[in-house]
Length: 456
Image (cartoon, rainbow, N blue to C red):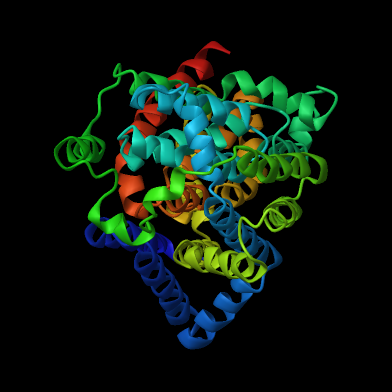
């Protein structure tokens, strides 16, 4: 069933409400209600029934439950490590290397490139390593969040050993047009497309240029730096509720192994099992093994800490659930199909990669679905690209980059929400400070895809 141009109304409302209110969850809920109001009017069904069925479908989905549990348990892990002074120990260690704000951000960027296996692992680990140190060096939390988020999905898609590469290689190789390219395997095909993943490349390169001042601080980011200079506060008043005051002696009696062993366990188990849930549970158990016998905390305190850490993640988890609900609402309205039908008459082989990137990026930004939208669009975009004679390797790269832009720039994508939570700042503070730099990368990518469409 089609709904016409009114299909765009819920997405428009979400963006407008979020910008005006600077609140994410409420904007998403408004978008969901509007979406199902449109469907109810068209189908003559009860809006209450539609909302109820859709919400329960989302929150009982295996992937949703997995995401909620993993993010919550990572909050538990960080709470336990912090109580054991592990985060202070790593901050003290890195402090010997990072003497100022620029070097702190550069080290965060380099660590983000090194830990490339998974964007969640990347974001959560790097924030745990560098947040305390960046505070000591008077780096705005918004700046740290931008650097960390920019080495999440953008780095993962550029390396063939990551969860992103494995997922997209499988999605693309289901299309007979891609198989016909004869590169031998799904991953081999993906690797051939990596040089054309312009958004990911630009997003990663812009970070050190930003850190060194080659690209200036603009808009909300400039205000964040001015706030630190005038008040000394590394986060805004709106972010105060995400940050607890610590004892003055928090940095005393620290041991870097209290950080390295649990986080190292997390990384190793993730690499071996390819399951973040198993990895974070293993890290929490290892933390208990090394903390309790040494009386870093009592058994009851340990249990209270991981419960409290999970509870501290609830506000972020609410945004994630609302974003997944909005994604479902957009799918029920057939938003991707409507947008693709609009642009279909205007494509040609030369401009097709750029159009593919824009379509996937816009749809991903609207829905917050950095994997779902590319997976849904690929079976439509790839055959259409083959029919127009476009270079399919560049088309593949454009689809991946559209999903990467969503993860990096959408104000309710899971990576954006997790980054703001891990860095202890209000989600919209992260969005407003990061978006200008994401848009620079997006504009540069459009130009690059347009040139590539004519050259290759």
